[in-house]
Image (cartoon, rainbow over all chains, first blue to last red; front, side, top):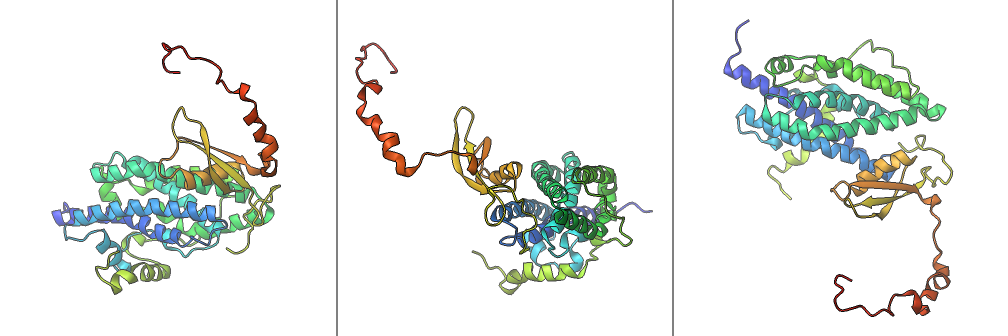
Length: 259
Length: 107
């Protein structure tokens, strides 16, 4: 193995930060879709607030990625002018909105992963990343708690809510392993104290989710026979293309438009 | 989701299944909790979370109370006169008959 060149270093560092930013950006878009569609207006607000927290994280992270990359791309250029293959988010966050139980299952896994990650990123050698993580920890702890509260209520609710919560966990299961899979950029970043190795938080994430499921009288779903992979390398499911088309079309149709 | 299987069918639930809670916010230490509004929620714990999202996102408070609206016993607007007016003609209930000595400050 040869020592990475400066260019490799820049690419890997940028790629790592972009992965974190794209997770937050894409999931914030999916959560925004719940406005007016949640069971109650209070829940519209709650999911919208979670989405806005994530959007805030995405803005800081994409801005930072643009600066690291050094090619003059700002947060908007990165959010609106990249195509599917350049997005580095995990496939869990791009999956189409399902029912409310699906969303709580997804949020429980994703927020548990994000919290375990951000708690460690507070000590990142990348000061900007450490700063973003420091602010995000409190937000993400709340997201995780919100999802946990609902999973417990649905799991330990009526026979129908129990059944539907269990089905939702099963549907989300194939997208869980990717959260804690290591890719080239995260290995590179972890070795330099910039990032956190996703596999290093796997046990913690699973333990937390298991504790919530136990309280919710739910079984852990069967391990998925197939699981998503390579979102961090730009390999995505069909859903991301439609999501980006909706998210990006105004910016692309009216370049430079402002309020 | 158009159906409503997530709703708890608690007593006093509204048409969509969730009861109403009144929200009280304490703006800072030393002040009282003040009524801020209401939220729907399946139970008190979730009501507290909904209230946090709706009423304290901009650092309006350091403490929140929620209480089931059904659990509040309120005076009736139609009884306003009999409840509150008699106070006006009982002047002896108001401390207006005392001469305040000149050298008493801060009274």
